[in-house]
Figure: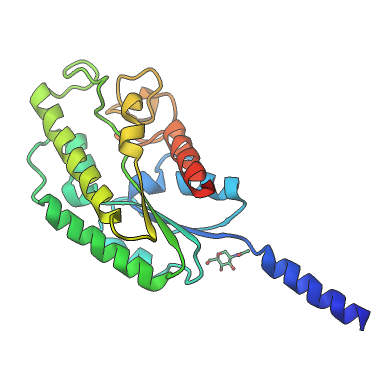
Length: 235
Ligand SMILES: *[C@@H]1O[C@H](CO)[C@@H](O)[C@H](O)[C@H]1NC(C)=O
């Protein structure tokens, strides 16, 4: 009898302390090419949580359905960074081409809304943290110096980044299970040309000294995002 009671208590304790289930979705800004750990992995470690990392470099909001279909139904926390490839944002920085984006902000917002509804259907109890793209062309950029593009090109790509940030923040509005993670603003002082950049420019890993690939987050950027998320989740 005493043994049975102990067994019941043991099961209760085990269930009560079951690992927090987290999942990571999105594009390369979530996946972290060239890095040992992305922000979702660093966050899971900090939380002592289980992570299902489904992020895929090059993915768009439209192609995210294959990631969403693999979401654990019991996920507690889902992180998402997406939308940049829908606008040709990083592709444009890489090739130096301007004018590649054909979407309006409302068209992008519609894609975000569809993705969020599908995530909510798959994992109804999860809180979704919509993590913005880190700032690349912040106030420390000097056209023709920090980057090889001219001032007009810098303004074009800043405009794309701004549309992406606006749509991301608006997508979180009015949904109590979605939180915008205002990383674009919080990384303004860590763009290219800053003393402590969280992203690389054209010259890949070496340009920030922090690993990663060209035009993408470095290790410091991923760690910073994980810290921001950890603070938000703790509140
Ligand atoms: C971690 O997540 C995976 C994928 O959802 C699941 O199969 C596994 O059982 C989970 N592990 C723990 C310890 O919760």
